[in-house]
Image (cartoon, rainbow, N blue to C red):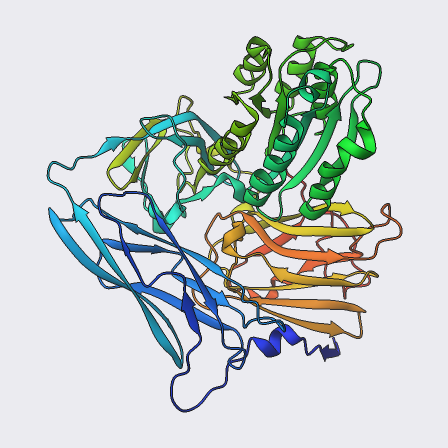
Length: 581
């Protein structure tokens, strides 16, 4: 079959081409030239950027002089500064592996290098004390989940001995897994740890503007500023967030903002509540009505594809709800929503707030004064950052029940957990060929006449280092790769586009610079921005298809909700492929 293509020369592609000759050029800048860890065990963040507009985008490789000196990630893509000279800074975490570090003082070097670019160096010092020993990590609410094809997952949070969330890049942990008494080989099974944020995060902010809060000096402004300037910036770009407010005994709670990935619009919406909605007219509290409204907006049932949270700011008092406490909390429990509460006010009803978090495996964060609200929201950020998912694809194909387990280590801390239920491979085989079938889906949100869509992977087969995706749409759009800072699955991959004049759509070619996509991996891959949108009821995509003919061993991808037949096969039956839970 003949197909004609028109190559689109995009500025991003031109900027991404580096053609230099002669001596190395200065381009790499780093925020620190030296750092002394001393006895500190927490990672140290360093910003890396490109300040030379003449060299285009550069791939910076980060290496170290000693095995005890670690970095994450080991490679970042640094575009040139924008037209105003503003750089795009990438964050790199530097940390120390103390397990085999001798007692005494040590020096090391971190190298930041790129092809034909002058290398930058960062000098590191560290002190290893005598008597150093491993301390325990605390696993919070570890839960095992099994699904097809032969997937074993553990969901958990990590805390230290002071019950503070342990926030670190997944590459900083050492993982060992077992299936019964058998060790699991990471290379064969794709054992990998990811931040829970790599799953689709959906969060509702429920904000109390009732009389008791209004009469607390500085409370409203502190609440809004903490939500806007502390919580929202800590979320990944694909996180969908909504806002509900309640402020009067005779006015039902109001949905201020539907779930959206437009975090700028969320900021504007939050700052407009006091003036545009409340307007000085406030009285009693309808806390339980607001919580029930929020919970029901997530949809019925428990989702296995997204993490659901409600962050409730209130003094915990309810004067006027039609809904009772038990009904409101049950609405969250039945939908698998974790409720986090910030308790603030002159008279806080902690019993109400603690009941909501106890029954949803959430957390309660008290704030004794308006000035403490920032710390409370920061604790929520830390708690979210300490959530992790460990996944691998079992090689077992029998009907024998075994108990998977894992040990996780970070520097001198470790924790071990064994599942409380059996994994039986035959019960999670799925349909024939599922091991080779990758699963993709879209998450879409709208805001102010524009739309944002993320193409996500829920499962990736082995040996995938390229993807060829066909899409058709009548809307203007831009597309970009979701980078590692937002838990993107294919950060650093190349992206090229070609127009298909025969089919009337666009081909998006994604290629890995080196290595394969993580086997059994999951997370956001591509971001599409559409606009302006005049009819939100019309589909954004007329077609979305992955050409699997480029794979040699039967691997293929299906996109939930779209036909799995090639777009050029006009006579093929347009039957949707499997839909999974």
